[in-house]
Length: 161
Image (cartoon, rainbow, N blue to C red; front, top):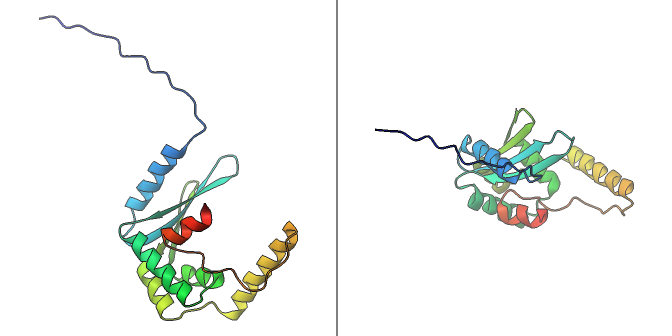
């Protein structure tokens, strides 16, 4: 019996600026480590100082996130409420240059349905930040906070694309 060794096929690696497949794998790995019904806000900090934001939902999170958004919009909630309720129901973590904010959607929905709102002091602070940003960019300041920012894919994807 004789064995024949063959040289492996040569593989040519081509550098690519597109890190999307790697980022997608990272996001999927992070999502797999979280409970169901969670909205994930994942920031991948790049070595050049920039960052890429990814949104992901664990099992059951997409429909529940959309339900949260419908209830919040129907209740007239705005960006200040989104920040406040989000802070109440968020777990933050880091993995190297990756920052993860995980929003437990069941408690978020309960807070929305129970009418939890941002306090006036924080709301005024959010408005000051918005007014200053408008001034810095040469835009006219608008009264009031923008609407609820979203925790479900229907609203999140509408505002990011």
